[in-house]
Length: 118
Image (cartoon, rainbow, N blue to C red; front, side):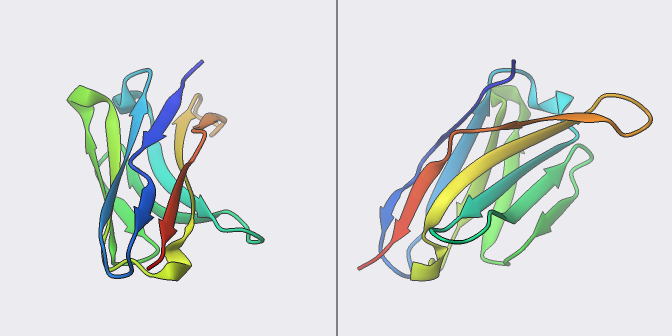
């Protein structure tokens, strides 16, 4: 069973920056997609950023940057110009396609709290 462990969350002032880390128990190169999601109180979980195995990235917001270090089996989420509305639990997600029909296995981390407040 793959484990994803997030770290780096905490309290930051508006306008500040933060970098989250997600370290996998296995090789991140085995995943087709790795993503960051977030969930604020009373809201649905939403995609923040993703990076595909070929290196393609997608972002919900240009203030965020996703990157990876294959040697460390770690994916990062850089966040800048943070706003109070960025307050949420941030989750790491990994997806591995297992056959040509598109069946897949996916994994979630336990989440890390980010609070943006003065």
